[in-house]
Length: 168
Image 1: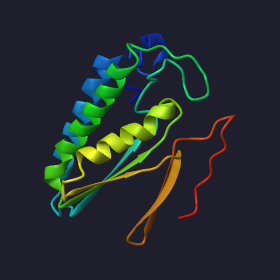
Image 2: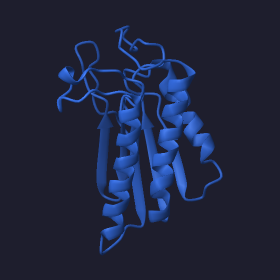
Image 3: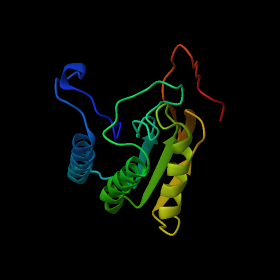
Image 4: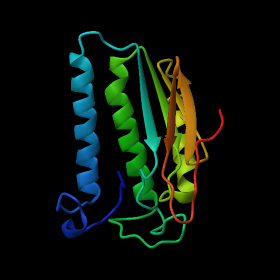
């Protein structure tokens, strides 16, 4: 979601600018859409899985973990806090739908040293909620097994970073 990003519309695939206000609305709208879709399912679900992280932040410092300068609405504590509160909003929006909700948080290349701490803050927020389990990983890739299904998630390879699916 690149919370904190500031991009002109001409650089965006849909031609609209991207900023924190748009990111906030996108998170809220997506949570609403998922809630409505899951609520309408005739069979229902016992368990939900949310995969977070990647480039949730645009950059708290104004630079990616590779040192690339990025445009931001704002940096620092405000970007961290907005990312925290929007993540909690998204999880809270979906919690009523499931008996169990597993959240997985992986690093991206924009959050840098702030990705893992944000994941730990989210983990602490839900530590006493029996329905929500938050799993935080300090790497950009992870594999989980759910029943007989393997889910592999990875932020993405680049010229500098060649990630592969990790062993379980």
